[in-house]
Length: 112
Image 1 (cartoon, one colour):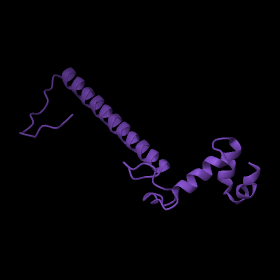
Image 2 (cartoon, rainbow, N blue to C red; image 1 turned 90 degrees about the vertical axis):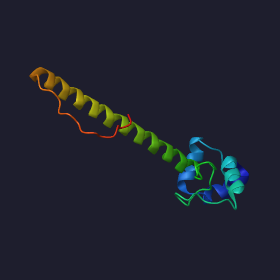
Image 3 (cartoon, one colour; image 1 turned 90 degrees about the horizontal axis):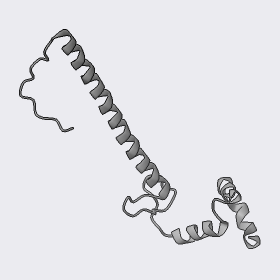
Image 4 (spheres, rainbow, N blue to C red; image 1 turned 60 degrees about the horizontal axis):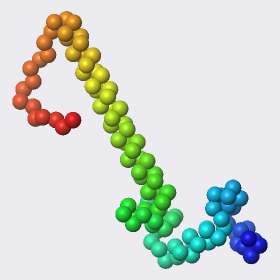
């Protein structure tokens, strides 16, 4: 590491802290930088090179994108569950009161 002491001081504080914690070595960081020279930058953040060719994003943006997709799927499932609970509650009240549900006109079938 002694040969890199000058370089270490030039790094942003965040990178220095990452190295100090042992999350990555300075050698690994230098390898990433030199292997990325001339690479296209991520269209999302324009800060890091594209590392995921299928998504066309850097690692950080790719993982955020995947997390967003999972969160969206979770929200959709939660909304569906709330809708199903409301439908069931209405059905029970109608059954208790002896009221039939209004007939629906020729509406197209909805997908589940």
